[in-house]
Length: 177
Image 1: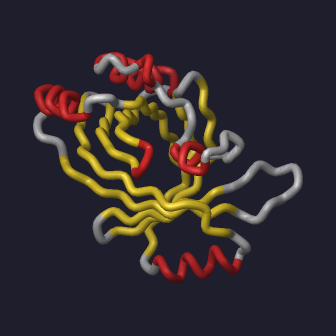
Image 2: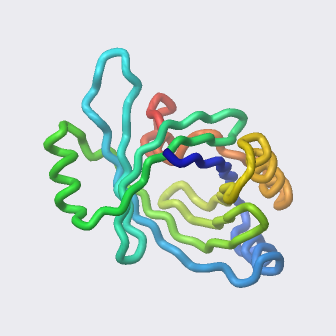
């Protein structure tokens, strides 16, 4: 499993923030990610489990995560792998009793800072967000500090969104991850 440390914050003026990000990091790399979320069959006493199938360009990946969110910081243990045949994976998920839950489309710009990847993105009907993920070596608390510091740099600590996109899209806080 890989570890992710990330935060997201709501953005009121994406045009202004994009200009500030470009001044700091250079021109961002445009991206579009289309995610399909599936939920596993209910198991008594077990919290819901979700699988994400993502298309970014011509590349498909599948991921599942064990999430922990503390003070707006996501600390994820993630398994992600490439998918050659998305239709076959959908068939497998159906066979295993998983159900389609929701689709998410995220478009924006990716910037690379020192020890962080910063994305300014619009997420479907949810609006604009700044996402910051720690990259590179370092212990977990140091990574949390880098992520929080980057969000603070852009004046967005008061706009941190602690709920996951899945929770926001489904409108239920009890939806995990």
